[in-house]
Length: 269
Ligand SMILES: Nc1ncnc2c1ncn2[C@@H]1O[C@H](COP(=O)(O)OP(=O)(O)OP(=O)(O)O)[C@@H](O)[C@H]1O
Ligand SMILES: [Mg+2]
Image 1: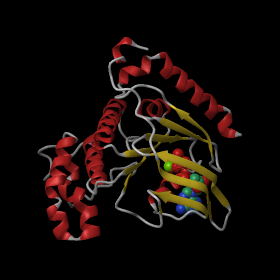
Image 2 (image 1 turned 90 degrees about the vertical axis):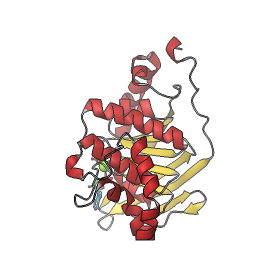
Image 3 (image 1 turned 60 degrees about the horizontal axis):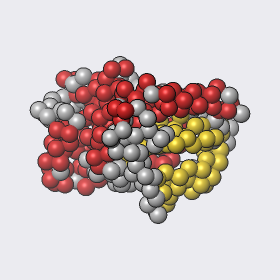
């Protein structure tokens, strides 16, 4: 192993399953479009999972089903022992775009989920937590700024705070940083890792980027082209915390080519 990474914490032990998907299928338009077919997935507590697959293979559909935003046509989704039947406070979701409301300040945007779920008083009470989160993501002093006064990366960081304000155990992320430039994206990925480790949350990330999946994940799930199925789950045995420099490790390169091979050939089986 690379000398520089010998004294850091080994890969976290993969714990108990927190999310269990069994035989999940999704059909759109009277069954004309088969978006997902028989997906089985088990996500372990406190681990970072990601899913990778070609465009249109059903990744966003899978995430929406997991978040309780749309029901599966068949199959079962269970989180922490309870079936997912709608949005829940223990699930945090982040979309590709930051989707902040332009007429609300940063802190008001962050508190919106609390306000919608529990009312204005609860949102006011949660303000110190929102400010602490802004601090955590390096946005101290921007709580009263409006989205138009934030850069793209800052808006995404505010969206991370909004996802975290309800203190969810599970974070579902649909290509959250794909609209950002590469340097900001690398930085945000490392921030994401730090937040997930600090909070001992379980994360599930949808991505198109093989290197992003490898650098962040404990397990990468590779999906076939539509109808999407999970064709292989690959354990990434790199130490934590991950650093961007790990991309030059031979192990890193081996994981990337293994996943690329699967996407090139297997994913179209
Ligand atoms: N609400 C919907 N109604 C009808 N068809 C849909 C709907 N949402 C998704 N689909 C179809 O389901 C399939 C999977 O879409 P989905 O958005 O899950 O793919 P994806 O893997 O997230 O793609 P991308 O990587 O491009 O974001 C596509 O063929 C899409 O056209
Ligand atoms: Mg998508």
